[in-house]
Image (cartoon, rainbow, N blue to C red; front, side):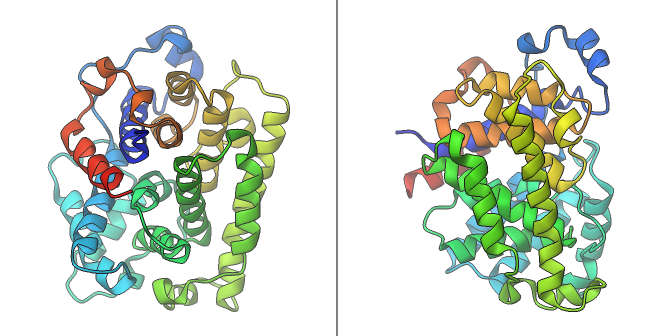
Length: 336
């Protein structure tokens, strides 16, 4: 059995842990600290960052919601708010968390405050799409439900249309790879999906969020986000036309601090090495940008396609939260 959910969750955490010590460093500093990037060793113990912490928060919220019935915004909001505010208050929330998440989660903690008032509609940071993989790994969701839930989990903190679209597109990437998509066709498939979704505003999930921005209508609002993602995919396609594995991918697709760049640069790292998952992680971790987020997304993509067997036991045995990652993966792989 391929076990794509287990593979994606483990890959995400491993990439996060590999990139944790290199975030905020430029490539020469990383090479001086870690040696040749193709030989980067996983830290022992392999501590994760807020990327995996928030991924687990989304995963738990999805699990708890689906235990009691179908997935929709009304039923998912409570578990997501509870998990996000628990993360906000956790003593382990000391792994360089993003300002947007901290600000929004502090507001989500206020009883009775509509989630739309907590959402930061000016932020398209990568803090939303680096945690969205569980939405793609839950089996049996209709495509519209998966897209709406991916955007909704983003919207509770990062309400910028690009954050919404990038979360949707990231989840779609994981789902395509888990279903066996050919990596060589991936960029074209993602562009087609983005074009299909470009003017689709998920009212039942997002409500009146668009009114908190300066757009004349919801279609204009969401199209801005998809246009940013399409531009990022075009930069990715150009980079892959003349691949340069030894060059920092941030130079062509961006440093990953914002959502569409995190997706594009992680995809570049993965697509440079679609059958060599450890190299994809190492390339993501040896970047001048948001290395842990780039590597964690690259790991989710590689693990979704190659399954749990992609990751050697001497890596997975040391990653923080291993038992919970395995339990969630087994739950969703077993239901496929």
